[in-house]
Image 1 (cartoon, rainbow, N blue to C red):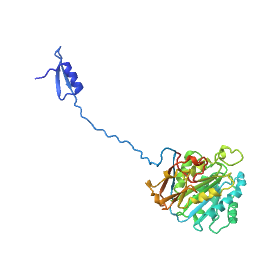
Image 2: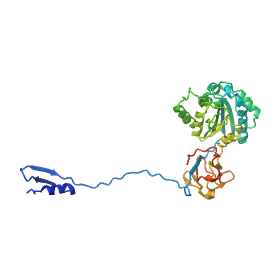
Image 3: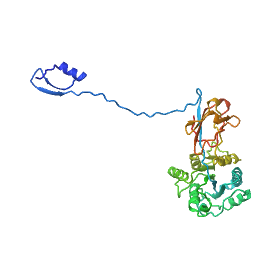
Image 4: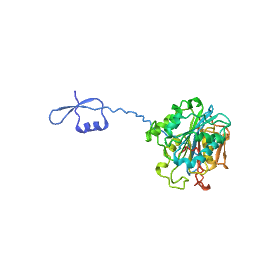
Length: 354
């Protein structure tokens, strides 16, 4: 026998839920309406929410800064290539170029290195046939190598490096695939490759990808015109003369950039040379509040007994040297009360701003 539900009961069923199938008779015409009332089953929904883990630097308030670097791998020697713009406007820098090469020779270890010199014209780079400078060579040898590079005025450092490393059979006779590789670009204009690497953003990225795969350990430095508001030239540098592409490539490898207009390239060249050595200390970008310093090696906090802060050099000295290939991060709160408006930055800084 079917049960008769008033409409009020039917409404209650919709609100509170009723189980089973029922036949409902209207109170007027004898029309039969079949209603199926669904049974609500609770469902547990699990949503994965990404969690960002923050490394807390001790201290209350203030601007936090993180300096970071990758410890170089142990290398079987170091091959160095200077690619020099030999266009007419670079004649004024000839003495500085050779002095920079001499400074690098003096800064390198007493053995294990080779230093080749060519130009930023791929025609020169592909056809070079002079043996590199080696330990024991003199500044006169550096002058001879510089003068023998030719005078093509093409400013295409990326193409020239490709030609030097890949297309020159002579260079294959002395370049060592197991050695580290340090490249130094020198130019008073922007990079203008168009043969192997296009002049647009994709060409720049192609060069970065290619160069990064040439050796297990690669390093980069650029001696170029930097942005007009910062360079030391007395004249107003046109935008096309600013070495943006060289600087972008150098920054991609955490390298060193030197203002070509500076009177003394020695500090920058020394910093570029130091890239190839294991870091036993690291100069900080800013002066820290000392008690906020914290050091991580591959995301693991380093014991306070394994490093020390040297306030005279504003650097962290490692009593336990981080292993090769390790990623090192040094976090701290900036002490704005000690005149950090200057840019006494660590030369190789690849960190982010606070």
